[in-house]
Length: 234
Image 1 (cartoon, one colour):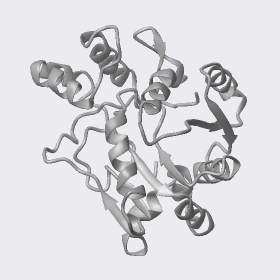
Image 2 (cartoon, rainbow, N blue to C red; image 1 turned 135 degrees about the vertical axis):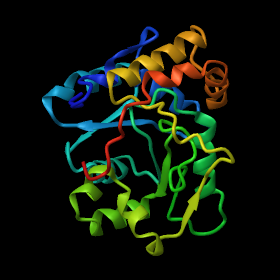
Image 3 (cartoon, one colour; image 1 turned 45 degrees about the vertical axis):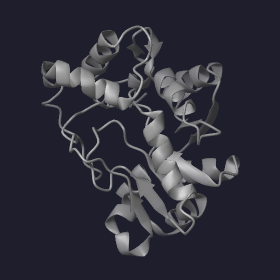
């Protein structure tokens, strides 16, 4: 709720439903997911978020605001998770099928895989990000990754030390990484709201349905094309 560029963004309305519910609903559609946990902070400003999440209903874990790695680690212990999937609550166009693809690259590998993501080589639109790791990787990061940006974003240490991990990358044949489907600003929110409006009262289906819309109406991309993505160090 404490977003600096768009305060309270995860409970803002998208086609009649708060963004958080959109993200949770789309995550629940993934066949490989058996539990969705909203891992928010212990700050009083996030009390409304936690209360709303429990009414969905969905599991809620509350932890440190700045040490998100610790929040994930403690949630994985609390719920005795074997594999952790990281998505963010400002991505209301999350694709459950793509999520499944990234998870299966870990759990069906038949060999050790420490980490898999569709962002190692970014070709998907920003806002479809999925990161997956066995709990053993999370435990290892919690013990060894000490820099502030490692703690704030959970997996940067893996990206910066690829030789220390067995990783897998899920990518696409076409580079659409210039597209912004995440919500950090008012312009991003306007874009997502328009996508939902154009694709009808029900939620957009596959991410490819959104791509097809944007191919028909490329001017929609202008709504938030000037938004700058913050770096992991900011």
